[in-house]
Image 1 (cartoon, helix red, strand yellow):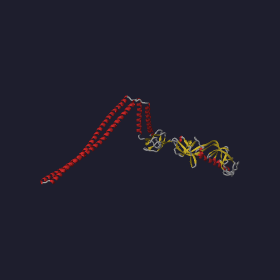
Image 2: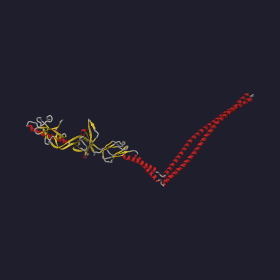
Image 3: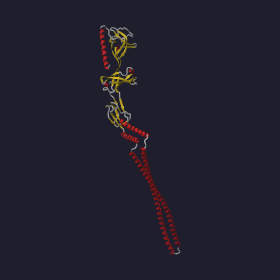
Image 4: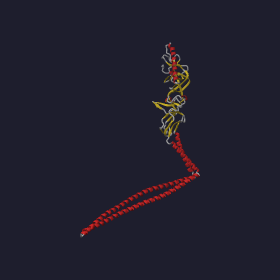
Amino acid sequence: MGKYKRILFIGLILILVLGVGAFLFFHFKGKGEAPPIVAKVERGEIQRLLSFSGSVSHINQIDLAPKVSGRVGEILVKVGDRVEQGQELLKIEIPDLEYQISQAQLNLNSAILRLKQLQEGPSPEEKRVLELSVEKAQQDLEKAQENYQRVLETTTYTSSVAENAVKIAERRLEEAKENLELTKMSVSQSIDIAQLSVDQASEDVENSPTQALKDQAERKLELAKEQLEAQKLAGEQQIKMAESQVRSAEDALDQAKQNLEQKTLANRDLVAQAESTLQSAEMALKIAQAQLDQRLAIQSETSLELQKTAIEQTQLTLNNLLKQKEDSLIRSPAPGIVGSLSVKVGDPVMVNTPILSLVDLDLLEIQANIPEVNIGLLRPSMEATVRADAFPDLEFKATLSYFNPLASVSQGVVNYIAHFDLEKAAMGLLKPGMTVELEIVVEKSSNTLIIPRPALHQEDQGDFVYVWDGKQMELRKVKTGIQNEIQVEIKEGLKEGEEVVLSLKSATFSFSSTPFSAQTP
């Protein structure tokens, strides 16, 4: 029974009670007594209701998180859009992904071709190409060997020439130094001889007996002195020339040494280059020969299995890259409405970090806090009547689905959250977050005796009513059943049609029995 219907029913009861009371009041007014207000025991239906508040929420919310890392490249929806299953929602850009896919595809194609070649063996054309490669590699090796030998010979010769030039320069320097020493000795001797002539001429001048001999000796002395000076000048020139020859020989030796050092370095580079060319040619020949031998050899099962494994690994790499490409496009897993979107174009995103949510407004439920004292009255599949302030003229139906197993405590009251499935008719009207009122019939009895709730008196000894027979009241013990705010079910103690007292205006009436202290209510 709805809230508004209950209010109407209570009003009718009050009108009935007041009407009956007024009738009895005026009926007994002439007798000077105030009649009681009574109601008849009737047969009908009674039910007990539980009322509580709840809120509408959506059952399905899907939080979508990327399966790959990257940056948001394109957003194809906005909050509030209704989307279908499989619809594209958002694209993520992964750097170099397309290049990696193309490379992986090339590697796979090469691995497959290699397996085919191993299985089929070389064709005559391929065999001839491989043989030509070996022949060319052999020719290149021979040329490299010849060049290496030639370089060795040339560098050996040029090094020998440079070394001989140094030796010659050293020898010429020694000769120049020896010549300088000899020149110095020769000049010294010549000067000594000229000095002796001067000395002898001086003695002759002093010892001349006659003037004529003295004059003659003086002329010889002057001539000897001139010869001495001439000899000194000539000696100096000879020594300077010999010293110049020494310096020239030293310069020539330095130049020869520098030339030898330069030639040695240059020859070393030439030899290293020729040696490197020779090694490259040897390696090229080995590779060409190995390729030919490998293609000509009968392939074993092991080599074929290894190649097949290589294909599987390459295929796995390609599949992983293609999966990344597929995962870079986020699609809707189910129909729904975009509830939230936390990124914009260009934002970085990480794996398993939610960025978008979908809700299904076609699947709503009601959640309500049920006090623990009422849990025993409720069970799954019970039907509830639902009312919302947004639709005051409408009633909806909901079915109790389940209780949360964990309780919540608020201000000392233990509650359990109950979940109610809404009927389809409510899906298009009620919205998540709305507050609603629910009523559930927890007890119900039909074709049973019913009295108004105010007629029942509950004492320690049990439940009692006052029965009015028109003259006096009888206090009678009863056995009750279902009770609600308005009515009480009577299982024993009353008969249909009897009247029970709802209210007394005075205490002047007598009682036919007094099972407990006789006090009028």
